Image (cartoon, rainbow, N blue to C red; front, top):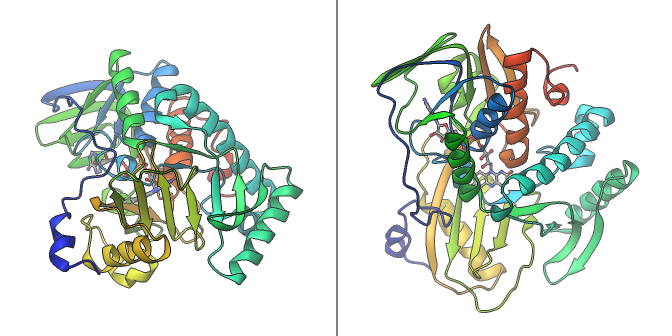
Length: 383
Ligand SMILES: Cc1cc2nc3c(=O)[nH]c(=O)nc-3n(C[C@H](O)[C@H](O)[C@H](O)COP(=O)(O)OP(=O)(O)OC[C@H]3O[C@@H](n4cnc5c(N)ncnc54)[C@H](O)[C@@H]3O)c2cc1C
């Protein structure tokens, strides 16, 4: 059993992805003018910036902290296709056409992300592993629904357990991808600023403590805490904390591909250097995990550690513990909306934003600049 002192000792809240090799970006000082101001430079905001530039818009992007300092650089590193709900559940909730449209968009987005930042992505596939007999049945229902729609999936039985293998999924280093994207956008002419929180947001103006951006349109691309930044979304969006640990490298490869277990409440992958990055147990943390606090807490860290030692049988020392905020909607669909004229918001990916967030960021850019998007249909109400 891990002692409380040992838990606290590694509560520095640094993700395994952070190698410390980031030179940083300047703070916004003074006034700037742009066609569009993007608030939030995680994976979604950076995809939005890239799309805006591709469309010929001038862009200023601001982040409260560092590039990908939120969930985008602190997550499990799974690039999964589909909605936050498994495909059969998505079909049931949203209808077959809409669920399939989401799945197809995400398949294409994983390919795009891999092509855009190949150094950060591994085409490993992913496993969904059942934690009980009832979940085996659920996996079978997912298999049937995906096969019916011609989506890539196989039944899997192996060392990890029983469930599904999705070869089109991938694993990635989320922080490296964001840093690569930010660098290439700055090189291409986007003006991106760190440590510049938007303290006042209105169509046409974004204020930061030391500066102001005047722009035609504002796009807020923030997941955790979205409802605080855009209070109009308060009834629809709820923020929660997700937590992870990483171990010292294992000498052998135990997990060639990322594993999603117990309906996705636990997830882990083995990194190329042999480390295990494992997270989950938000549900077992109870009401306390519906919080804006993004520090690891003892209760959930103990559960993750118990699973690592007990169920996975891994005794390598824990080297990293971290947490971050994400936000959820009741229906599991993201927010992609013009909340008032000239002010767009995207976020609330229900714990599943690496792929869909990139799509929504790009869709928001297209909608804000051209008024239409080939990506937005399944994410906007009643398409
Ligand atoms: C532990 C964990 C594991 C996860 N695992 C996975 C996974 O394996 N696969 C998956 O698909 N999803 C996963 N997710 C969810 C995924 O990480 C997020 O949905 C996604 O990264 C959201 O990215 P984003 O760019 O939309 O938002 P964020 O990462 O929230 O980025 C928003 C940015 O906005 C900035 N910001 C906030 N407020 C302001 C302000 N006032 N002014 C300016 N900037 C501001 C923040 O500093 C931040 O950098 C996980 C999340 C967590 C926490």
